[in-house]
Length: 122
Image 1 (spheres, rainbow, N blue to C red):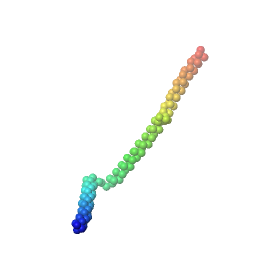
Image 2: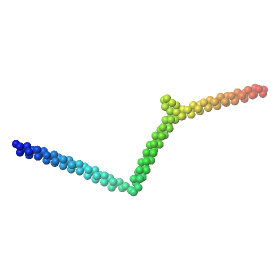
Image 3: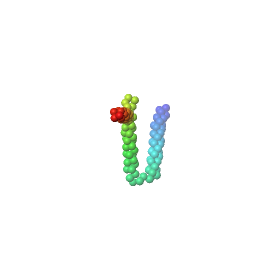
Image 4: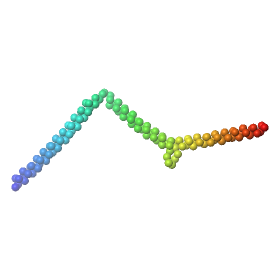
């Protein structure tokens, strides 16, 4: 029985090694497949000299557009205001309304002045 146990233990060890070797081989095959795919993609992409710099410049520009958009959005929020504070546009509108009212009052005063002068000269 001891010989059988010894053989069985040896069998389990060898089986583990075989499974490990199969697993390692499987991983190697996956890696080879991935690397083959990447090589094929690079070959087919027909990358030209200086293209990397061009792409980097485009990436930088796109990042700048993101920053510009964010800053424009901040400016819009400052102009529009929020539920607690009127924005710059609301303030400009209030100033415009006040100036229009002043203008109407000044016109009415001018008309009154002209009427008074007409009555004085009569």
